[in-house]
Amino acid sequence: MAKRKGKRSTVRATLPVRKEGVSKGPIKITLYDFNEETFEEREIKAAKECLEYKGRPTVTWVNVDGVEDHEAVEAICKCFGIHPLTIEDIVHIGQRPKVDDYGQYLYIVVKMIYQFGDTREIVSEQVSIILGMTWVLSFQERIGADVFDPVRDRLRKGKGLLRKKKADFLAYTLIDAIVDNYFLILEDMGNKLESLDEELVTNPTEQTMHTIHNLMRDLIFLQKTLWPLRGVAEHMGKGTSKFDQETSLYIKDLTDHTVQALDTIDTYMALLSSMMDTYVSSLSHKMTDVLKVLTIITTIFTPATFIASVYGMNFQVNMPEIHNPWGYALSWLAMGGSILLMLIWFKRKKWF
Image (tube, rainbow, N blue to C red; front, side, top):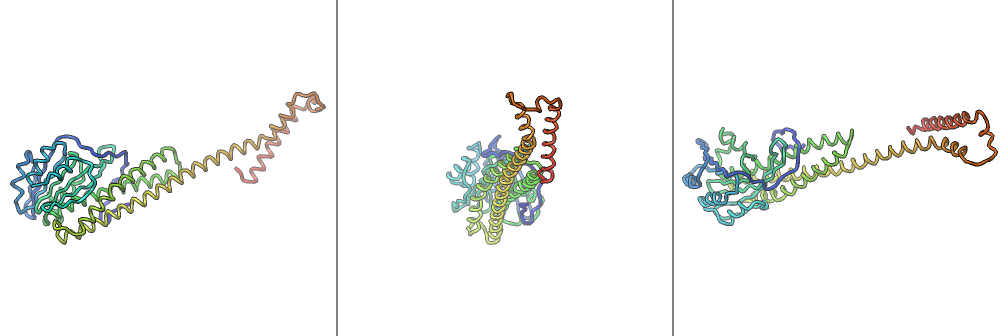
C-alpha cells in the first residue's frame, strides 16, 4: 500500500508519537562541491571557508545541521549575500512551507519528517533550502538525522544525473528526497492498517481503538504538513528563472507525487473511520451476546423460581404437597423437568 511509482518498498515499522521543532547539539557544516568529473566533500569549521567556492563553475552544496548558533548561521548566509529576512526565517523554526523569490536566490521552506531512533519516533523539522545560480544552502534543525543520505550516496558514487546537472536540479533532488520519505512512512502506516484489520476481525481490544486513534492523529498531522508542501511544488512548477525547463518537468512530477500522497492519506483516513465503526459494531455484538446468554439463563430458571416461590410462602393453607413425604423430591423433579424442557426447546430453536 502507498507505494510511489518506481520506488522501492520500505521496512515495516510502528509509528509512535511525533515531535516537532527538535533542535539539539552544536552546529555542523558540510560542504559538497562537484561536477560530472570532480567531487569534493569536506566539513567546514568557519563560514569564511565557503567564500572560495562561491564563484566556482562547479555546483556547491553547503548543508548546515543545527540552527541554534544564530551567529554561525548568519555568517554562512552573509557569505552568499542572503537577506536578513531570510536569515530570520531560518533561525526561527516553525515556518509554514513556502517559496520566496529574492531575485538573486530562491528561498524554500519545507517540512521534513522521518522515523528516528529505536522507537521509530516520527520527527518533524523545518528544512530551509536556498537556491542560487551555482550553489545550494540547506539548513536543518537536527544533527545526524535526515533523509538526504541517498542524495549524498549518489553524489559520492556519481550515480544518475545529479552530478551532470546544475544547482537547480540539486535543490529539486533534496525536496524529492523529503517527499519520498512521506511515502515510506505512509507505507508503514499501510502495513499497520493491514494488521489492525486482521485484529478487528479476530480479537479487537481496547488497545486496538487506541492504535486507531493514534494512526488517525498521525495521518491528520501528515495531511497538514503535505498540503502546503503541495503548494510549494505547484509554485515551483509554474516556472521561475531559478529552474531551467528540464528541471521544471521534474518539479511537475514532484507535484503529482504530493497529490498522490494526499490521496493515499484520504484513503487511509476513510479506512480508519470504517475501522472505528467496525470496532463499535463489534462491541455492540459482544454486548448482545452477553445479554442473550443472561436472558437464556434467566428464562431457564424462571419456572424453577416460580415453583420455589409458591411453596416458600409462609401461609397455613391446604397444600397437600407440604405434608407429603415425597413433596421435597417431587418439587425437585418439577423444577428439574422444567429446566430440561426449556433447554430442549431452546436447542430446537437454535438459540444457543
